[in-house]
Length: 325
Image 1 (tube, helix red, strand yellow):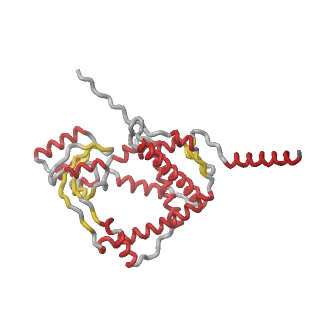
Image 2: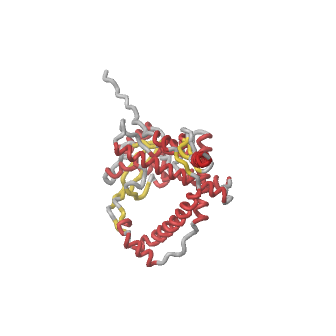
Image 3: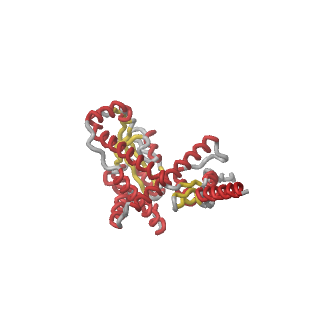
């Protein structure tokens, strides 16, 4: 009898320990990292910009892709939580001056007025600045745990070039100009003037809202995929040809192709400095990933698999067809 009582107490203790170790998460939480939570609201907000609309119902391939995307995003958010927690342990902070400097630099990289469109209200601005603060903290941690790589000799650079030679062949490129304005009506008026023979370059200088307006809208040479997808229209144009009106989050664009060039292989001297930077970055990334793996093992991570599974792909937008009169 004493044996069975003892065994029963052992089982009770084991069950209690297992229950304590397996944290039960509410359905509003996707995962917990130590005492911090990743909520469904946060997860879906991060997910939204990464996905386009799917078929209804989603195809098997879309289901598989979406599942992989959710896992990759969750891993990324967990890593972010761990790095930020380590930053706090290291006593790292981002000063207001550092934050404002980074904010100003980023703002300048957007087309005129485009940044204000993204941050229409105070809540959006605060949220954006908090994300920027976190990014700066993560950069500080990376710089702390993976200091700059020692000088890389030319033999290593040359070996890298030979092994990755195909990476240094530039694809077909286009040199184009653009005019970007706020309203479709203004874009239509400008397009009419271009078709009548007015100088695209001069119109860009006077009317375009983007930083390159002072250069007549000249974007320089770029390859397919180097710019947002709205720019891909230029690859179907001939030299001297002007596009129609293309809408993007920044406004209404008109493009004109100035020149085209085919594939070109860069020689060693042209790319050796870039290769040195690439090798250094790869080495620093390896050091950082080893550090992250080590601290991740010490963290308590719980994933709410049911909640994660319940997050579904977005449905395609409803298209209303106009009835014939």
